[in-house]
Image (cartoon, rainbow, N blue to C red; front, top):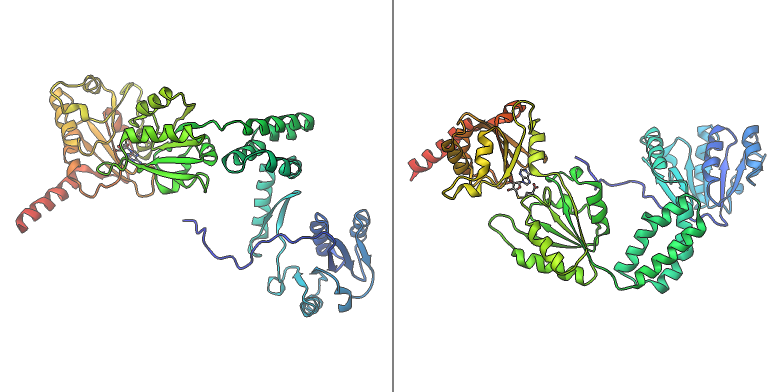
Amino acid sequence: MSDINATLSAFPIFIKTDGKRATIIGGGEEAYAKARLLAQSSAQLRVISEHIDSDFERWGNDKNIEFLHVPYHRELLAGSALVFAATGSETADRQVAEDARALNILVNVVDRPELCDFYTPALVNRAPVAVAIGTEGAGPVLAQQIRARVDQMLPPSLGKLASLAAYYREAVELRVPRGAQRRRFWSSFFGGKVARLVEQNSLPDAALEIENLIRAQQAEPQGHVALVGAGPGAEDLLTLRAQRLMMEADVIVHDALVPETVVSMGRRDAERVAAGKRKGCHSKTQDEINDLLVELAQSGKRVVRLKCGDPLVFGRAGEELAALRDAGISHEIVPGITAACAAAADFSLPLTLRGVASSMVFTTGHDLKGNSLPDWARLAIDGATVAVYMGKSTAAEVSSRLAEAGLSPDTAVAVVENASLPNSRLMHGTLADLAVLSEFDDLTGPVLTIIGDAVAGADFEGSEPLASRRHTALNAVIQQEAAQ
Ligand code: SAH
């Protein structure tokens, strides 16, 4: 488990260097390395040592670094904002640290964390953007590896883009209303065409595009609704598009089945509305949700309607889409990983299996309650793999009606509670065993059932036989009755 709230014993800050002096004591390799790092800032660098490596000095002369070929003396530290001790001798470094501290100057001693007031980070420099990586001295190699990865992620033109943003900031503040519109402006600025044009070094075109963007934001904001699939629950099964839209959303309207960890992948200050709709606790009716989506979009909001799994599978998307269409609201759909696919993955279960199963049925089993058998029962008998959503309460009916219709009671069945999540539970058995599922009181998470010959190809390691659970459940009932 990640421990993202652990305490840092060194807090990262950015120190202003304009017009400030940084003094390095030492002239060898380590002093040179510090100088190279500091030369990325505007600090005036002074290097003090009787012996200074010639390549260090050659490099430094081009950079206006001041070299003093004199023995170290504490007076030489006066007027520095930062001091670096890199003499190569522990005693000498200790002395420098002590002197700096006496003068109230922050000091860094190479390779001696215990003598440091601050550490220098591994740095990704896209001035004015900087990413500083620190490990509190625990892993310089780790810091360099992270640095290399971040370096790769950030285009070389990022600094130019950030400077351009600084240049336009005032104009944008005057011309683009604050709040959602301004946020949208900057989000398009950094993430869209402007960034691409700057990357291609087409600055005149970028300037035109910025002007267009400013104008577009001055117009009435246009609301938009995205019906977004959140996947089965694991955060890393969210699609990149879903996450991008969640980062751009003004409002996220989510179902109860979408875990908090997934909802919080969205923009931190996006408004969140829990639309409920978990079995037994409907906090809003479907009509209320439809109206809410329309109202939010009409007020110019960018809405993400976040639904578990895929939004078009048992998600009442049909009604929401009809409401949006009737109101003339722009909308889009972002598919998600549906529970059947996540459950099959947990079981390493091929949903279609060459020569065994070549079609699939997504059902809830609710239509088995009527008198006539639905068409899909025939498909099941012909070998389709059947995924039953919301199937806990209908398990007994699904089991008995399919058996009556002619599906062998020995047909393999796989059941997954909380598919894709760390607390998932896997059970397996036969169509006959499935009948007991609705009696299991400890199944409180969402449950998906897969029925069909293809299930026989699953990996049952880590899965409990339904039959043994059945005995436990029956015993519990018997004990309860005996106690009464
Ligand atoms: N749109 C969703 C289905 C919504 S209906 C999708 O595509 O997955 C709600 C049902 O989905 C639940 O009753 C359960 O059967 C199934 N479900 C959703 N998430 C699940 C999960 N993590 N594990 C097992 N079943 C899940």
